[in-house]
Length: 571
Image (tube, rainbow, N blue to C red; front, top):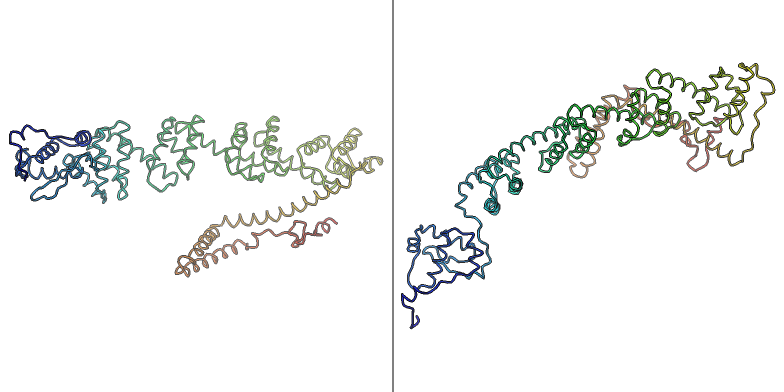
């Protein structure tokens, strides 16, 4: 002990220094009791003599337990160190060396809140970690949201998520409400009621789309977008019902399309979707007849089908005309041009279309006979139009074929035939027996190079083989279609495909299940075989049976040499 000391009066007139960092960093986060205890303890550090915790608590008019709790708070802030609790002995640390952060909340302020939140978590069979609870309390301290409003958010999330409830989800939802300036219990309750309504709407859409999951936060953005577009709930549901299966992104594309077409109410949407389906059906029907593969019909609908249906053509008429166009090797552009001509000519209703198709079929059959008589002639509208003109001159098919025989070998058979028939019409020659002798001579053959003749022969040969292949493949497709229509066959075929995949997986991952899978496969294959026998089919019927087994109707043998089947059939 030093030989010198301050007197009592001298010590009473001294100063207790408080570091500025305590004032700026810690004092705003502490309540009045905590500040009083810290400052009085700091004063006692400079005063000699005995001074226990009970005396300090009595002077500050707080309980001894409260005094210990306050020093524990400052210990968490790294401002003091509790060396002993009974008796209480505290060591003050310098503020500038403190690395801790002051608590932003006092637990006692949220005691009732914590109890209610704990009950909500218990019902959800969930528990938040201490640091998660600290995040929640800091959120409430730093935002104007009422405690009861936050509890309402927590209860909503607990009911929605169940055991999957997370602190992050609760805070995200609360932060979203704060951004929307919804702080009170009434505001949050109204928002969640609206949210519940939108959740029911989303669940209904999910059912229509075949989506088997709960709505997520980002799903509600689609509802907000559709509402901003002016789409009624019934209109959106009609779009989902039309899709039948898909995602919200797919539905969004259809809803946006309906909005662009001015369909906002349920009635308008259903009318538009019915018209849209009719257009798509028309495109698919025409595509099947033309042999064109269509993946996305919307482009064809906007380019072609919409115009066709507006002009009065229905699905049956379009299908009949497409069958005719297929025989002319038409695609969509050529078919559309053909319909333009028919519309101009007034051929629109079913009766006129059927009459037109029947007339064209007769002309096509005659054109095939003309091809046999005088060589290669392309199947075109102009060729059929020429035949129509000849028939309007009252020439029989027999007379037209006589002209074709005389045009054999001509560079341009059809113009030569037209010249002959025009001469016969002028001379009123309508029977083969009345044809003058001098006109019976072969038409003058114009010079053609060997390369041109060879190219024509090659083209004819390729067309001949293509027709034979198409016939064989058509038989196989018809057999497959017949089998697929049978319910027993389709069920067995589906089971076989499923079990073959399961068998491959089981060989690697679960060998114990192999016997059961093999037994199911045998049963499915037996059922498939019985179905085929009942239909009078076999597996071989699903594979094209080409007329020439040597070249498979390609014209070439495996070694690359040409097959002689073409020459034998033509000789």
